[in-house]
Length: 282
Image (tube, rainbow, N blue to C red; front, side, top):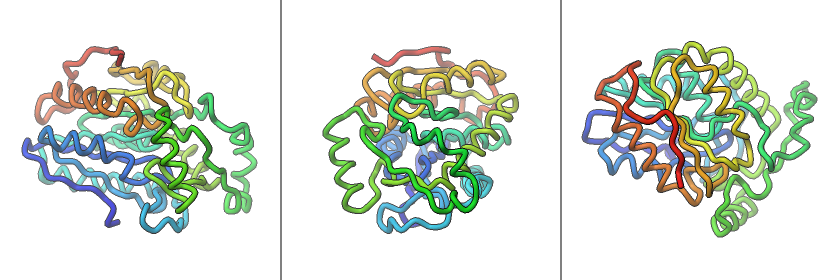
């Protein structure tokens, strides 16, 4: 767990950031740095049984999604002890974990980056359609799905660097080189849980999503817009793919995040943030 990131801020407000499936805190590091510069306490834990260490890429046993959720909930509760406001955000499946915490009343606001409620992006491998078969034991313990270009990145230089890291050590700042069927099965169970819980998410919510997301289409955003009791703010990005926190518009992602956070009153819980319902990043 030594790869977890924690930076104490100065404004009494905290942001818990959750990495993606088979990812690690490195994918959230640029955003965490910018939020901490702005005065926020930032915590980016490495969630065991869900994430993969960049230093020791040997994959451990995949844990049930409820175990992922309990680890994230414990981190939020710890931040709550010393901060007036706790915002929870995440990338991809980490955004889904954030939404699940919001439904449980464990977040004052939500920052959902590339939320993935459908694996229907333009670069998703056709093999993913066979996932229901992979969920059958013992196949779920044996099958893995190899990640492939563009790895959620439109930036070609960064993509090449990620590909080299995956080839050398099987893991990179953009996640692991392979995804186990067991992990994808638990991710789908979490997705189903979030879809059932949307009506319970009443806190201010901001969504950041790429128009050309290669993993999940805008359909995920549209479902959230239709299902959440209060309309979320949405910022669309046009020069990035799925890994918004690392790709070409990572600075714009940080700026959009800060606009949302700064628009929340300190200690605010369940009241509307002063952000526009819809924004577009140039």
